[in-house]
Image (cartoon, one colour):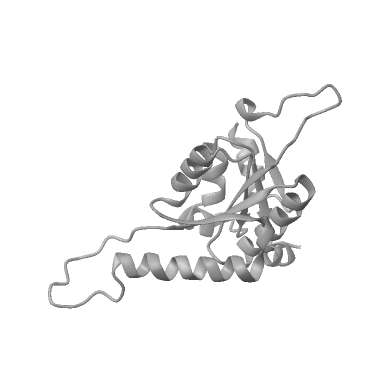
Length: 183
């Protein structure tokens, strides 16, 4: 996928389905045979990721598919504080995040559409792409926050990196609030 398409994905005002040439669906004689039976939805619990989950839920219903919800904890380098206890240990953080993801899925998604929830630790774009590969998902649906300019340069774009490294098509869903701010 070239840089122009990636930029369009990150800055567009609408949701964009990015399909890299090696991941294009096969033609079935009447058009493309799209089957989204297994959908991966990464979430950071933001309004943008809730919006993406709503899109994924509609697709799962339409294609009789199921959704795997994923949250990635990005490791933070810690200095050695010696005698000072760290607020949450690694195990506590994983336990709390799993509970939060479970609550999120219970409130935001119909139970019959949920295949599983997963919490991973690592660089978000890399863990999302790796999870898509190992789970053999048909589609990733990911929310974008709509950052541009300086904010995008500083914060980076997980969605853009997922589009670049994913082994399957990626549907980027723009945050409703970002769309209304930009007009």
